[in-house]
Length: 178
Image 1 (tube, rainbow, N blue to C red):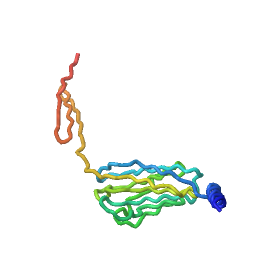
Image 2 (image 1 turned 90 degrees about the vertical axis):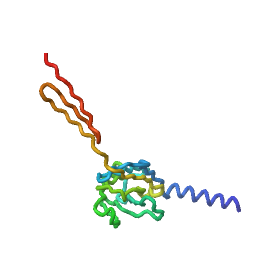
Image 3 (image 1 turned 30 degrees about the vertical axis):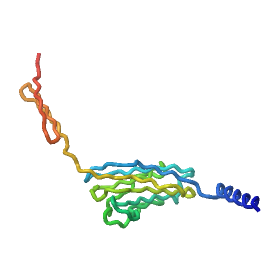
Image 4 (image 1 turned 135 degrees about the vertical axis):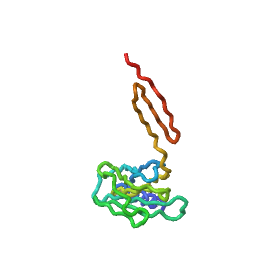
C-alpha cells in the first residue's frame, strides 16, 4: 500500500512538471522616497521562464500607511491595455510606464501626495507562469525641499557667486587682467 501511495505522489509531481504551472519572479525596490507634488515611477521587473503571452497581466495594489486591511487594486494591465482602478485617490493619476516584452511592469503616479504614503505591490502573471510572490515597495512621500539656487554675475572685473538653500553664501572674486 505504501508503494502505491509513493508511486501516486511521484506521478503527480511528474505531471505537474510537464503540464503544471511555473513560477514567476517579480522584483521592485524595497523603498522609494518621492517628493510631494512630483511624478513617481514605481519600478517593477520580472523573470518568466515562458515567452511573454498575450494573456500576461500586471496588477498594482495599494495599502495606505497604518491601514491593516486588504490592499486595493489601483491599476491593471493586460493585452496591451491599461485599466485604472476605482480608487478615487488615484483617479487619473496612474499610467503605464512598462514594456512587457522587456519584462518591465512599471507604472507612473503623478502628483504624489502625503496620503500616498504606504505599500504598493506589483503582481505579474504570464501563463503558464502564474505562481510566485508579488513584490512590494514602501513609498514615502516627503516634503519638497528648498531648492538650492546658484547665481553668478560679473560687475566691473569682479565676479559674485552666490549659492544657498535657505541661507545664502556669497563670494566675491576679482578678475585679474594682464
